[in-house]
Image 1 (tube, one colour):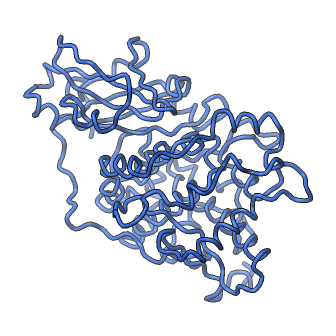
Image 2 (cartoon, helix red, strand yellow; image 1 turned 180 degrees about the vertical axis):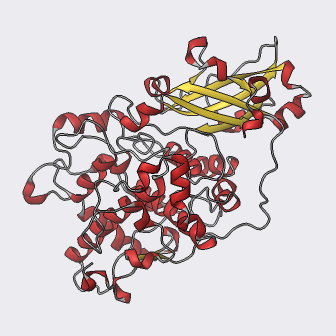
Image 3 (spheres, one colour; image 1 turned 60 degrees about the vertical axis):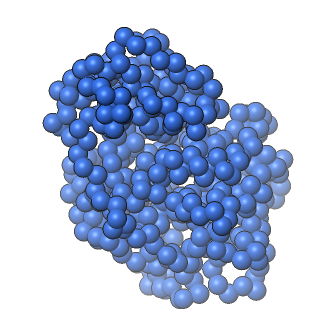
Length: 444
């Protein structure tokens, strides 16, 4: 290892802070550095740093590649995205030095703490509203076809701040994120396709889809500045879990062995470790002190002592859907309603999150974040996406037993259109229903 390259002075350590805590001057410095990253090199299209890094998460594919980079729903999710966020932060620092050579400190990528529902400030940061994906320079995209695709399908107005706040709060996103502290060795486990609790990937998925285009589309999310503040916060929770119990980092090889042993020794492509100039591996990311990677956080989330580990649910409804069905309809959320067998209920054909959650048959909502299965080998290999809903309270409220109840699933696509599939072939029906009926409850 190059010793000189690995040593970091205090000025070299970037301190990531909540975007809301930054002064106007500090926010403006960050905004200008990010804008600098949009500039193409020597006027050649598609050569900006923002574009280079953004497309790593999806489209367009690098020449010679047949599959996009994807680390979702697999155990390398925390490590791969840590390396990815570092790639962006290093480019941000370089851009900042280009326009502010007089600054001696290293600018940091801020984070957006979407678990903070305080009414004292905008929930969705104003700086992200001011950042317009539709206003990127004409030479940002490498060709007109991709530019037209982005402008047609993947650039929309942000939702009102109140809706962002209320939908996240109704989802109890803070409790969902803090639940990672209550499940030993779950920090590195994936749950997007297993329905398991205790993973930061659950609230991660929800926020991607809630923010809307291009964030709710895997292949284009990296082109949105919101992506980077969102993932800085995800990384903050991951580091807090390591601080709480570093054994979950030391013992990752055991967990990897249970899940996918090949991934533990597989390099995190396409990244290089900036400190060593060598390849990045998962073990490089499992560290107690992130200053060794060039950054720290001002404040880490703390375990909520009032948030006890949930008791074992008495009733769970299982849903398994072929992943191609999810991709073809561009499904982003799914909600479960429980009703008495033989009794018809009306599912509103327009999504109103306040009315839905007050519906007595409503159980809950979950998010799914998948890529184009035709060019993502990771997602296509999953074949089936699984979801599990705790139906204990809803059954009690309706005074129903499992044997007298049945479920209805309503989906929301990327534009919040409501889809209630009628075709039985849409679901993998042998695994659709209450786990006790399926004989699977004891496997939890």
